[in-house]
Length: 399
Image (cartoon, rainbow, N blue to C red; front, side):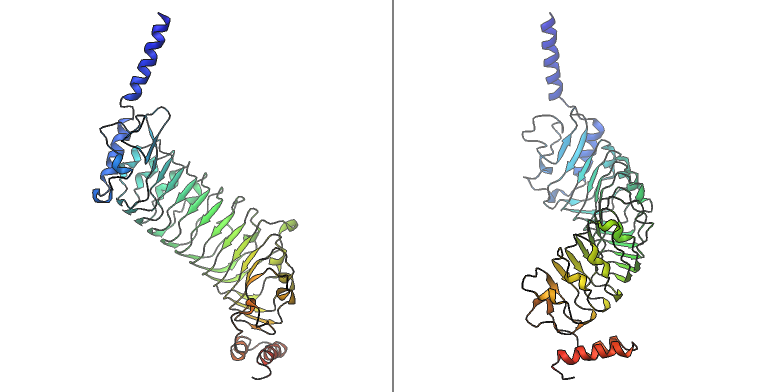
């Protein structure tokens, strides 16, 4: 009798697995999701084409139906992941996506979804990964997205999103990776989530200062990509002292000044810095030479003056150095042209004297005497004389 009971329980368990187990609200949400996508954009061999609701989405094994694009909870009752294949599905994201309350991953990347991101997405309280990159979503980022307290990755890059960033972005306390690059976002940077590891907002129309309060408490931040925006003003010394910072790209903005302090205790994880194509004036920051593992530095096409610090040429970790397109003067350090140098980049398009023509570091050629003289107009005579001597020697004594 005891063995018979166990046998019946075993049979009942497997019968239940073969029956419809997925919660009805999840099935209706999946149906709405598929119906919001243009039928003409669903190839017969695609994941979505296999979503045949004559079978249960979570029934196993998946032989011909629901073969990909959707995953279920271990008890086969709830939808936990939607990860579409990137083949060009076209349609809108249905507001009924909110019914999938156990969803942890929603990845629709590299398709042709359009329209607004529904505000009802805030109901997905278990969502950890939201990737909508490389679609055609438009409108603003809904403020309701900040209700997703479990979210660790948010990637809305390469869309047509506009408007300002949500003010309460910092309430996403679990967020580690944020990428909103290549959109049409405007306004200032709000306070950022404290657990961020990677921040990418490049190629938007963001503006204003990069303030310390925005980055306050970001002790784990490793990557900052804010290039191709309209940020301006002074970049404070606090920025490069963020304790975990490794890569910085702030190129193509309108920064006018950069403050650099030596890293505390000589310790820093900074490997790459790109500040090219801004409006940074003053002398080259000497203290960059004190960042122990810095290997790539670009300050090209700014308004920098003065001589190249000797410490730059003595820095063994430095492999790429771009200082071209400024108004640097004097003789570049000879170490840059030693036979064993491993530095690549450019010192060209400056006001330097004695930059060897056979060195790729000296390409393109230096600015003309007239341009350099104009850049240093109003400066003390001794500095004007250095410019004149630089141009005179560079031209073989002919001015």
